[in-house]
Length: 398
Ligand SMILES: Cc1ncc(COP(=O)(O)O)c(C=O)c1O
Image 1 (cartoon, protein in one colour):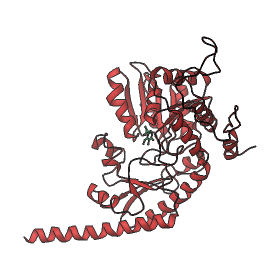
Image 2 (spheres, protein in one colour; image 1 turned 60 degrees about the horizontal axis):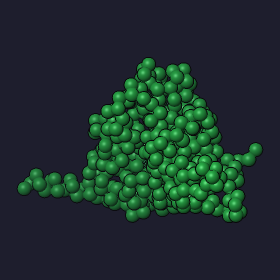
Image 3 (cartoon, rainbow, N blue to C red; image 1 turned 90 degrees about the vertical axis):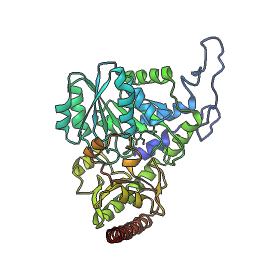
Image 4 (tube, rainbow, N blue to C red; image 1 turned 90 degrees about the horizontal axis):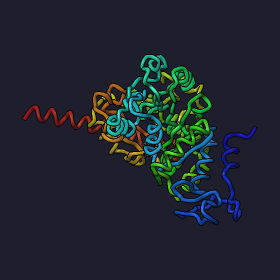
């Protein structure tokens, strides 16, 4: 049996026309026809493009799906899946869902009569209790962004089937190198390919993978009918990123594990969120359904204030403060003020995204250097805490 990594590299096609080893970028809007309706498989580049098709086939294979469609962003991919529904249908979604998906559901789709209910899906029992006769789509992220909650895909897929609902898993954080939700019973997988698939923080892209040809055709219809396609150059960049996916993910996982273990021992840290830690409440499910635990680590501070978190995220030398994740370079962010700003604060906190929560996207540098950087930022936090106390004291004397 070929390994997944071998299969992946082997499945990237050479150009049948010229033998070019790298997939050519077909930078064209249209294709010449021999007679009306007689073409060589392509007619107009919104409907299909050979470079995009190479990417779509590659990701369908990686996720063990029947078909894939590539979109201009992860959100456009999510949007295409929601468009499978009709007015009156309900979505049941994981409660600490990515802020952009929450915004799309509430601010765009609610007015079209699609309602969303949220549940802590890390306990499958909660899914069963929250399902209504109108639920048509169950939406999971596992691990979630940014509290790294894990949901049992297999158990929830069984619940979805029993209630005639589609199960869609946002597999952005794990990537198919670690977890293949379609093999566990999910119907659809979505990706922000902006993250690990692309892997180099140089593009915005999204992918929907379906477990059947029929579902794949519905998504393909929506891709063409609504037009949010991925262009040929960005498709090529994602293919190029995917070529090193397995290698990168291995290093991300190993670095993240070391950093999570370091954070667990630091006196300024309150909680560490990483599915690879034995202390993670869903560690056993994570071990069962994925080959590794990914490159994202979140933590909260004992001094649980936005001020302390902001001080920390502006004190690191290597970790850059930025939205996004999954690239070779390390990044960090403060979700309460960045990715999750569009979620009302009470709802955000109830989902475990505390004021001081900091999310690290661990890069491919040496783990020791990254730990050193974090240690120095903790030092600064400590001194600023003492200075604040001194200022408070001076103020009280004045
Ligand atoms: C889990 C997850 N899904 C979807 C998205 C949206 O992807 P994009 O930014 O490519 O539209 C993001 C973006 O951060 C994400 O983290």
